[in-house]
Picture 1 (cartoon, rainbow, N blue to C red):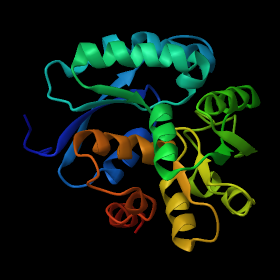
Picture 2 (tube, rainbow, N blue to C red; picture 1 turned 45 degrees about the horizontal axis):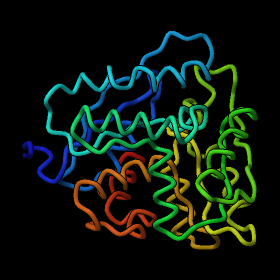
Picture 3 (cartoon, rainbow, N blue to C red; picture 1 turned 90 degrees about the horizontal axis):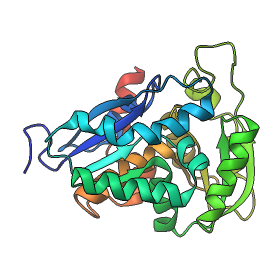
Length: 254
């Protein structure tokens, strides 16, 4: 079953409440024939870590906003929740969520792990906008997927803004890529977080081709949706080089 604006696949997207990046980047990344509908993960918990865990607790209820829309995939546009919950809890949630919605459910973190496996990348470097405590939890999570984190480089954030990650510019997000891409023995550089704007620096680095390929949570979130709906229609290299999406980003930058 298809809908007018998504003949190849309709994606249900769950986005953290104040996130300003997931929906714009997802819209840029999706190829023609795909579309998404969005619901917001909302929490009134006091701290970031409490909210991230709460997002997983409310995910099934929030996904009910999609009612009987024929979504082929259900994408949770958040990575921090996965680090805190751990793989086993994450997998249980995704199984329940997918079963209740009749669609494949996945998180940005599982999509990224799948993307790295698809590329054969085992040794990674991280560009991280997180506080140290969450970065450490992210390293443990990636290691639970059999990955080796060679280095995690912090992206400077502004704690005085409305949100230290969501208020980052693309230029700030890409400030550590030259350093990470030039590291020896790194198979891929990963830009963490679905709230950090990644598309412009990622595209510039991959087009330059002067080191390890760069991918991000958002790139893999969209790649996985298309893989679920129509497997192998778009090879990973086309995603990294922006073959089907760069013109939309460039149009917005004019």
